[in-house]
Image (cartoon, rainbow, N blue to C red; front, side):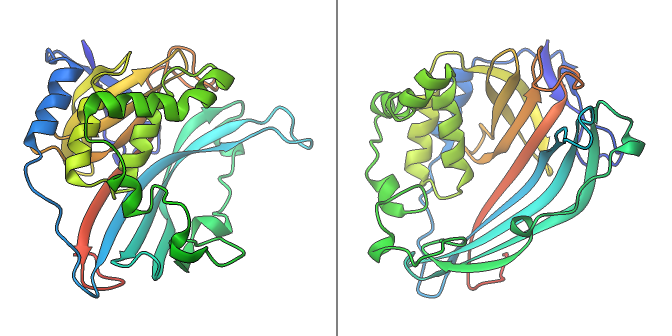
Length: 296
């Protein structure tokens, strides 16, 4: 038996939970290899005046912790949002980011009834439009020349990475080794790879190599063979511990990265969560567009 999922946007107002499927999955390595093999197209180059458009439709856990005034009150919702970014051909020029808290909200649980658990409004960073060269939307000082040392927003960052899956897998381990040792988190290489894919900026050839590298990591399994994120269906490749399962959703037919999902484990981070509860998901869409504000 492998996990399935009730649609997050079902409109019930309650937290989605993992279901089940009787379909026998292939191995994670088989699915990731199939997805890597399916990536045959090259990335569409940007012409002058064009932008990379990256849209993230997200349902994320919004935790309201105990306070001095209400020390016994602790609860969480699943909250819907949209994040859109327009990235220019020359990344040293101005980027635009728009964030919106959407109407969707689902009760995850708490130490009090939902009727006694108001959902706070969005913070300033959760909504509005921001502009900044190099994607520096919240910086108090201008970014350095050339946007500084290349990071995951910079094409040079990806150009420098090896396309050899073995080398790439070791790079993921080395890159996260300090944090893994400090926090005892063995699955950080997988989490870091998902964060890179979430940017929407990983070139097609590197995405294929990254899938093959993920297949070499310890503990990577198939959690679900049919996850529907905003109408796009893919396979969930996952790592998990007793607290949580983190899933990469990929379409093995064409190699598309669809998004990610998190599911509560057998000992959830919050005791009021039932094991198998979907605690968040993101659907990622990337396109080349002709201007800021364009989405197709």
